[in-house]
Image 1 (tube, rainbow, N blue to C red):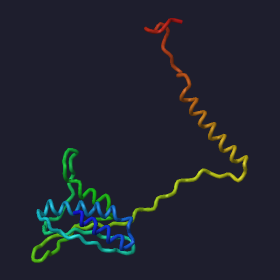
Image 2 (cartoon, rainbow, N blue to C red):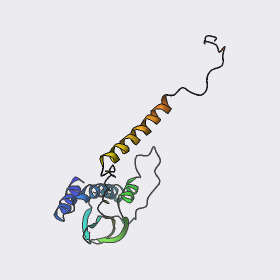
Image 3 (cartoon, helix red, strand yellow):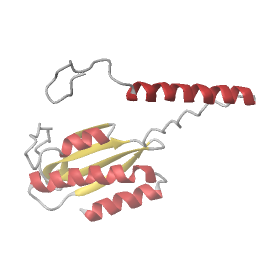
Image 4 (cartoon, rainbow, N blue to C red):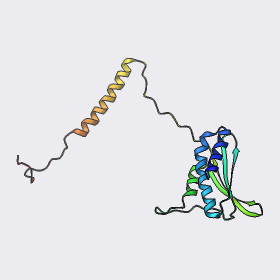
Length: 169
């Protein structure tokens, strides 16, 4: 399976889509594991197809005609989460019957897209005047002081007089 992951990474590098490499490797690992486990045959094929400029379809073809289905794996089960991982990492996925030589098999595929760009964090407002900056900072300090004062202030309730273990007043 490591050859399949290296193949996918190399193809995506050639297509100038290195941001998809980690996701493609994970998806191919899950699909290839399912092919070996459920098709009960060590042979499988991996294909990658470019869809548009930045979307890719990865597929694993095996010799079993049985189409996959997601299962709800319990917390203590060792297997059964592969297609859920594929579902979470891909735009969409599916399976199609195919012929492998004279034998009917299937191709399980997933369409991958590059990750969405991350919005930069909002910046602290910059005021054009020095007085505006000072007022802004004083406001922040006042809010912080109020928060600190509220957390260290004495509680509004007290134990009643004569409580065991406390001196009487």
